[in-house]
Length: 528
Image (tube, rainbow, N blue to C red):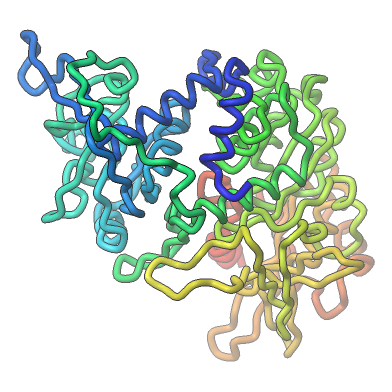
């Protein structure tokens, strides 16, 4: 398979009645219905279906009915599509439809500061905006109310002043939705008008190259130079195939996740993608009879403290987005399913997979696993890992094509398996010795009385030499004296900490609740 869209459409053609998606409220749609929705979005965005609005006494500005007729087709040819829809059935259909039309999704976080979004829009120059109607309202007529509630929302009506854009929205009509915007529900259930089929040839999605840009995902950068990762339909398809090779998936399986790169492999395999709702995760896994699920380690930890056993139907539990402490891995294994930890980055999804059992057996460092089939790895002289392969993003926005990408991770290769030593930027220098926190943190966290451990360096402003601080979250039987006695058995003498700081919790950031090392450094510095 060299294209994600044609792969899913092929499944829909062969298994039209099979359940494709279960939404957060438990409602099901078949593969046939998913394909119909994707095609409806594609046809509307390529001009195959022209829509006009008719009035039947509706309030001014509110669409009452949409009349549809056939027209000439024209693909988007890689045009940017600003996308701001929360995970759900509508988001899946809209995203796949936009890519099928030849568009490039520009994923927008509704919480972006306006100046950040403006910089990203200047870099991508979208011709379409796909968003929820509520976001138009909160960024338009009720912008003041949103700001008073602490919400800084970008201007979706006119994301790039001076450049005309078209709009497609989901949800009910609300004040602030641009005049002439297409409404998803109207596209799916149109009032059909007179059709002129003379030139109504739909764009053949198989004719759109696998090299066509499909998504731009911003990871870092500044307002002056935003850094966006450009994935093609082909690179996404290759990454999805790698996920499918890493854990078995087949028709009848149910994958419970809100992660696109795990939900799409389910669709490609003819399985069911189960989207989380707002309820308890353990209850949802049981109700949906999920066979596969994804969790962020810190969220899983909270779940397993409440629910030590997971449903028997769950065969695979995938962990990702942040390192998993040994205590969490042990609890996850005791919960029942096979536990796999995924190593990936936005530019290369995924890279390696290791089981919880393998990770716990690793004496030193954090085991990432063997590179997946087709993934190329190179370790530079300083130990940094570089990755290549068919799943590699095409390029960074505005830059030359990528041949390989620097991960920023320091690793070593042991019997064909990657072992993480730490982040390159987190390396500590003391007395001329390089200290890699990731080499020791898993072993320290596995000691009795320690729930989590992190090592940070505090630089002396005059000499630049760093104080090594071991921060720990104590467990019930924590004893600092016993911890100090145990450290020389698992930590090299040159890396032993200058001091130990027990903390109630570590500072975290982002949706994945990753450890915020910069904030941790500030915290332990204040406690010196």
